[in-house]
Amino acid sequence: MFSSAEFRGYEVDSNIEAGHGRADIILYHKSDDQKHVIILEFNEMTDDESLSGIIDDADLMALASKTLGQLEGKHSLARLKDKSQRAYLFSVVVVKTFIAVECKEMSLSSSTE
Image (cartoon, rainbow, N blue to C red):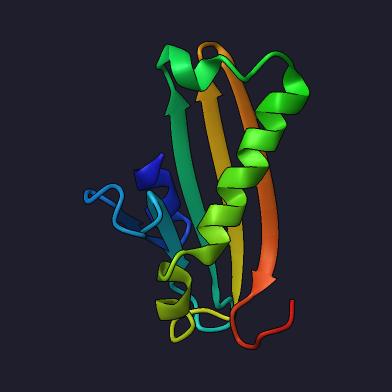
């Protein structure tokens, strides 16, 4: 996946320091006229306590939305303003064999979206 992204003009930055306010994978477009970044946050739910509240698709999507909200609040977005004008945020939650993806486009150049 990463070699394909690099071939298509993206610089790949992956987070090896999990839990320190940084997204898991950030793809910067190298072109000056594109000025966008793709941010991916992955969460895998494996422990029984976390899984106990998930009964249906709505619960899974709510978890993905919550994770997306946390991603919006991370300080990593502030440091991206110098490199990009727009961000595409993706929250990917994996629970056993089920996957939920929530996404949002936001402006980094001003406080309005």
